[in-house]
Amino acid sequence: MGWNSRSFERCTAAPTDPARRCLVTDTWTPTRVRELESLLTERDGHILEDLERFRALSTRLIQRLHFPAGLHGLHATVPTATRLANRVLLRLEAHGLIARIDRRVGGALRGSAATTWHLAATGERLLRARRGESGRRRYVTPSRDFLAHTLAVAEFAGATKESELRGEIDVLELDTEPSCWRPFHGPVGVVTLKPDLFTVVANADVEAHVFVEIDRGTEHLPAVIKKCRTYQQYRQTGLAQASSGVFPAVLWVTPDAERARKLRTAIRREPDLPADLFTICEEAEALTALTVFLAPSPTSRKEVSS
Image: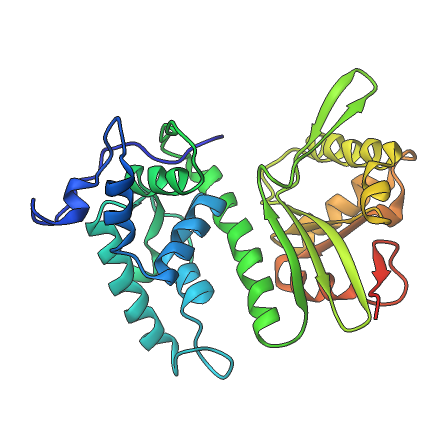
């Protein structure tokens, strides 16, 4: 589902404020773009870019990605970082750059930390203007399941970046949809493989290429098997191997152990699906599973040139 934003939000700035004058119009002049950009810090720009990449982020995820706290972060405590993140997000909201999604997803978070944000019309148009692109995207309110999946993908990406911040791994690439999609010629024409994420992680000696699938337990197992066959078909084309020298591992992240067991059983029952292509783990073990790909044995790894 493609969704970004439409101009339904109302800016709370005064009419003479540049943000008010730079809200979405049919024509954006370079002067208007410069006026709006003058209101933004570098970190503000990165927040807008992440909202475009991930399509939705909670306040807590934005805090973790852009206001890290603790021993390896910029701020002493998570509450301090969260308060600062809230102030920045409210300012961006007032300028019409971001907006709240009026739909809650279940979880342990409460209050402002659980607020979910998306890129609003003005923010979306600004990023397009920076790239010299015209047009705009229409905002479609996401379903609860789609939003939960979107936030789960962002959660994995955030945890990966935090692992890098702690010095555990290097994240060389982290591509979201649709930039991580891989079109290829299949048995009946052009097919597009659509992973949730593609990442390249490394340590001092090796790098690992990994497609990531975030499974929420809502897809029927035949649909999962069909997706696995698409991975196998893509591997057989040799396109990835020709580009990078390896075929990426496929990591399925499940919500619990029972779902992981069902996926393993379903894949093993298919004689045409190679067992070494797929790794299935629970959500709590996702980072551990990712770092295992940096061990000497996985075929998805390659030596880092010194």
